[in-house]
Image (tube, one colour):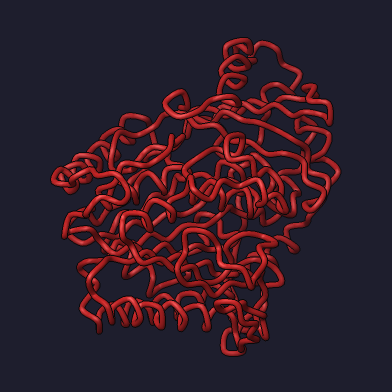
Amino acid sequence: MNRASWRVRGGAALAVLLAGVAGLVLVRPGVAAAPSRPNILLLVLDDARTGATGVMSKTEDWLRRGGTYLPNTVATTPSCCPSRASLLSGRFTHNHGVNQQDAIGRYDHERTLQHDLKAAGYGTAAVGKLFNRWPLAQRPPGFDRWALTHGGYDGAWFGVEGKSRRVGYSTTFIGEQVNRYLDDFEADDTRPWFMYAGFTAPHSPYTPEDKYAGREFPWDGNPATRETDRRDKPSWVRKYSISFEEGTATRAAQLRTLLSVDDAVESVRQHLSARGELDNTLVMLVSDNGKAWGEHGLPSKFTPYRESVNVPVYLWWPGHVPAREDTRLAALVDVAPTLLAAAGLRPSYELDGRSLLGPARERVLLEYWRDKANGSFPTWASLLSWGRYQYTEYFDGEGRRTEREYYDLAADPWQLTNLLGDRDPANDPALTPLADALAAQRRCAGSGCF
């Protein structure tokens, strides 16, 4: 899509969004709330890239056809725990500090969405996967109720408010537990509620329900799965050689698990409807990061490529957001600002993200730190302007820049030709402004972030 058409579609959606929230009263957490504050349901998938959720037909009917779909959203750190920390804080990883899978101990839980909503009178609950290695018997700060797991499908272990419990199929249990907490909150219908529901699908080991085990998903791949010449790519990329067949098998396995998520989400929708709460509930469905299906020969996330960072976002809020596709660039750090704005709250701390109910962004920082839990993927930082360009720097263990990439995304959306690795200096971009901007964004905070 050219930039002109992007501006028309994104701008039209923005006008409706702004009109929908014009009446919000901004208050600090703890101050008596406006009666129109919505319930908030945040549904989080695990490793679902943009496009994967297309198999969730019932969810698509509800959230996409009835709400706003933002396909050009990115995970600013495409790794489970760091990304979830950004999602719930609205802060970049270099500010919240959780740059490793096991680094949740660095997190400031008082600078989070759940903290501010709870302080403003919301009932709060967390179900499913929240943070890697979080002690399941321990209540996560900011949440009144909790039923958490570290992952898995059949026979997964959950910590339900301090008690260990083994469940049948985890996806089904998560949907049922959301409905149980919904009943509890609605029994005392004097305050709104915030529910976080973290599904373990479609993360490995990709165990499907029996009824979906044989489902097939034919696929012809894409230009990046057929990339044969990777001489322009960084040296670490060329160490991997995932085949098209392997990527296709991973894709099918992931999609089978999402069919059960579709069932669970539909059960929650029906429960909200039966309770008469659909019209007063804002629903967002997101994923913590994407997942490669063999593109560029790669096996996983943790990279700056589109398959790793591009995630789906659905925003459904009756009477407030339009039913349409909004193609603006967005980021997971924008989720917390959006939900706080919808609740009529001023955040109690400085946010790096921006509300999706406000002006669009043109560029965004992506960042990742080498993590032994994730294998040999290197540290990197990247500037992305969707549909225009992506500039990436890689670093060694001492913080020295080792390699660079630049992609002209208007001409090369699948990132097949690194203009800094094709041995043709005539097509190289001006590097000093890009390097300076990236260095500044790696230190940014609040309004200083793109």
